[in-house]
Image (cartoon, rainbow, N blue to C red; front, side, top):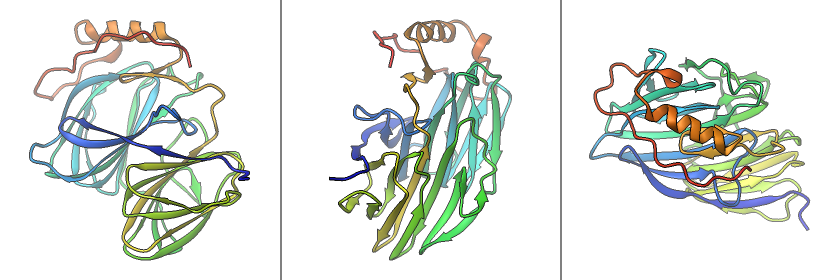
Amino acid sequence: MSAVVVERITSHVGDVGGLPIQRALPNKGRRVIGAWCFADHAGPATTVKRMNVGPHPHTGLSTFSWMIEGEILHRDSLGSEQVLRAGQVNLMTAGHGISHSEESLTDRIHLAQLWIALPDAERERAPSFQHFPDLPRCAVGGFDGTLLVGELDGQRSPVPSFTPLLGVDLAADGPADATLPLNADFEYGVMLLEGEVEIAPAGHDAIESVAPGTLLYIGPGCPSVELRCMSATRLLLLGGEPWATPPLLWWNFVGREPAEMQVWAEDWAREEGGRFGTVTGYVGPRIAVPQVPALRKP
């Protein structure tokens, strides 16, 4: 019997601003991996109509945008206006509240959009926006690695986090075989973006073959994982310390209590300004808040 918990999570297919996406988190079987509470994979796709997401609000989280192909223009209520290009990360920390818009500037888009839940001590902090044009690179057993957040192989990403996290992009043009040491206190997810990979977590009695649309969860206690591919492949390795109680997610908000969601929804439904501020420069309407459903605490 395997000593390490391993689960296969199937992504939901959807659409964001006209761009097809696969959403691995949150999922009915597993809502978070560490503080990673949302994981969308958009593309790779050449769109007929470019992605256009009007101003919308966020609370209690950081949005983490990793651009693989194409360009997106970010605007937010702090006055930030930043083009995100391939190989770069945008980190927007909502804290108490922020609003933003996203518009693709290219027909070809490949993007990972991730959310990081903020811990209790930070979720009411002032909002902020940071752009990271250069990230540490490393060769890992035939994979070309980009360290998105956290530490790996003696390197540290400049992207900050309020809880212990790891995020790594691993890409190979052909056959590759790598064994990565893991923090046994973390839980992990291997999220396939392109190709196919065989995953062998230490302490697990099987080799898992994974294709895009599937995220493989690896529970705490795993000291290492072997990744093997035979052709062009790209994946994300996401990890973090498990949360005792997963946060509550609804629409664009991350909180703890259902009553919070109602307050935030009413705040956004009022005229612009207030908690979420105003996005300037975007031409078009704000996204309307849906009706808050009956929510239960996690």
